[in-house]
Image (cartoon, rainbow, N blue to C red):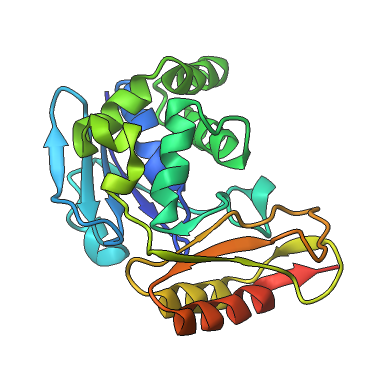
Length: 244
């Protein structure tokens, strides 16, 4: 099987690379994935699992990936203009665990893992298109991808993601500033919101496209260390929401 590398092109990075890497490793590929330093873990490799995680992003990390071919992973076309996952920052870890363990199946992230993985497998000529889709779906449904993930982070990470990616203690639900329908999200304000929330901060439960806003219908949840940080992030989230 081929040795491949995965890097995210998205800023802020979506959960896709973090979820895709163990799923591809479960099909038999030798995968080295670069994820940014939002997690405090040591780079690790388990030869029997065929998976390696490296901290960092961008071209500098690409040069360090032990891979025959490196894939730069962006948002799949079917998700634009919204992030593939509904989480940013450390909350990404929780969303990925949900997909791998079957607790959060059926969403855009699972679809992106299957379709992107099948594209890679087909391009590498490891499988034909139909078999590639079956291989990716089987990696998730069989629990094999979750096992590969646990080789890096430990079984406890699957049982309680907060042991690896602890969220900041204060949280707040964000309401839209007017009624409307979510058309998408702007990247720059989302990045600014994460910066304001700090290293333990996170954005969760981003409303999907088509979501109709209202007084008691949050469009996101933010996690931060202080009320001041939450205030700033709340404003950025509102400005990031593209309402129609």
